[in-house]
Image (cartoon, rainbow over all chains, first blue to last red; front, side, top):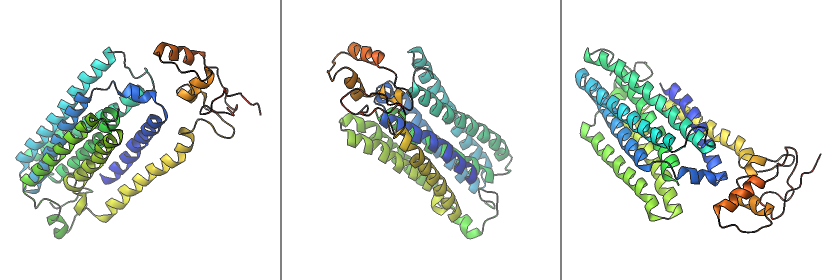
Length: 170
Length: 171
């Protein structure tokens, strides 16, 4: 898992470094960033931080050999992932309706690429947690709760940096 | 737990110290701290101070990330090689930045220019409009449309950051 996360650091790190360089260089990017929805970004940050709490509580329960409680916390974490995706869908729909699409300019290209790539990781994490939760219910492979938890916390950390870049620093 | 995240067996001492000897309330307190930091990062821009906004936005993002990594991911008790590997990856990202910033963060070099980049600079617009100030957005748009194309390989001698029109030099 740690090797996977190491490769993810270079993927997201490269993307975010490009964003930062372009943002510093070109003033119109800050004008475009002014149109992102801070409320939606804040809600999603809250949702992901809370889901990270559930993920670590699932790990805590698994460490204490309580598979059913671990499965419950995993499903609460998945609930956070689904909430995140719903908020993101509403946000994107609103932006596209206002004419801000992935081809509008390079800022919006970066915005949709970075947030979209992160969204794919959210879907992957939720899927993995769902699979692990079924084993948890049977008390099997409880060590996997820690592995999916670590992945989920990483997805949370990526968002922690995307949030100020896309929504706060305007 | 008999296995670590990488699937290998770990010794009981490491297992015991894997952060899970804390009660569940310990993580709830950390989550509450993360929420307080989130509120501060959202409220930061309301102060209207650019430097403060940068600190509250990115400084607090760093602190939040460290809290999640250290205590939720339990990196504070993780094996040392994990730290080395993750830091190596961060250094790779830094090398990527150092390798590309010299091009990306410049408008021109010894034998090249970046014409598209000039279109974004106020200095360039002023250079082509004779240094006149334009207050209305319409006037700025017209200036943008009137900008001439500077071909690659043609150096803008006075540059977009200068005060006169760049003139292509053919090599």
